[in-house]
Length: 161
Image 1 (cartoon, rainbow, N blue to C red):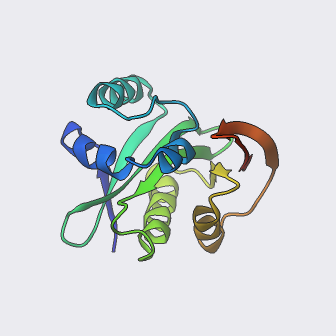
Image 2: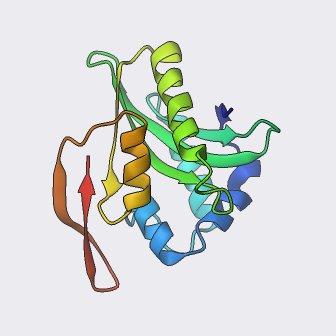
């Protein structure tokens, strides 16, 4: 079972640890941050989110209360009953255990029952097959594939919405 709570400054060290690999980092942030991730970057991000009334940085906790994931909910649109998720990451030592799917299900419940929205969107790098499969298993459907959105070490990656 995954529990959600607001992401806090005390969570920053773990988030940074999960993003030590440059490829994972780039897939996570699409160049919205500079590698390597630093405390200053995350604190600036959290301050921007705090000022945005339609965005929330969230932490996912396992049954024992340990931080196992992070995601952002942003662009809440109550007229269209929608919200967008981003910066989705699971503890690197816990990947492959179903935590991502559980975290998404908890996020969908939060979006529906707390925020009252019915549509959740997100984007995933097309070469991140593991995350893409997780999103599909969680009930999301592919809407659009944008090619050549970002370059990483000579590779060109697209984004699937």
